[in-house]
Amino acid sequence: MIEGSCLCGAVAYRAFEPLRTVTYCHCSYCRKSSGAAFSANVRAKRGSFEVTHGSEHVLAYESTPGKLRCSCELCGSQLYAVGDKFPDEVIIRLGTVDRFDEYAHGVEERHLFPESEANAPWVGHWAP
Image (cartoon, rainbow, N blue to C red; front, side, top):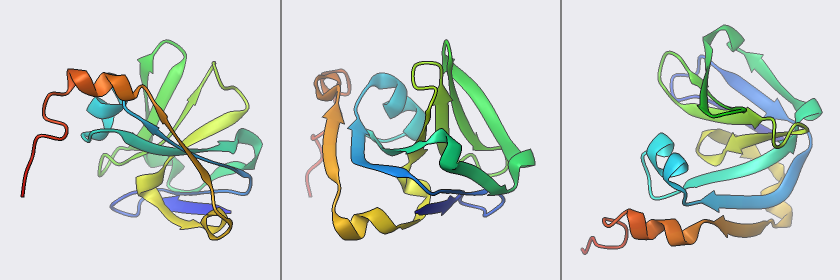
C-alpha cells in the first residue's frame, strides 16, 4: 500500500496496488513541473487509487493532450497524474509518499529520457 499527502496536508491519497517499479523521468516537462533534475514516480492501478480527503483542493492541469497533472491548489504540491495513454494507471509523485510498503520488498528502478539532461546545463555542474 501507498499513502501520501501534499505539503500542507489538505489532500491525502492511498493506493492499494502500486506497481513495483520506480521511474525517474528526466524529460523537460517533468523537470519543469517538479522544479528538479527529474521527477520520481511510481504507478498504481487506477481502480486501487483514491483521494482519501481534500479532493475539493485537487487542481488538474493538462500539461500535454490527454495527460492531467494533479496538485494541491493550496500548497502547489504535485501529487499524481492520470492520462489517456495509461488509462488503467495513476502516476504517483514519490515526493508526496508517506508510506510505501513495497519498498520493504525491493523495487525495480528505471530512468526515462536521461539524454534530456543535456538540455538542463545546470545538472551535475554544482560542486561542494
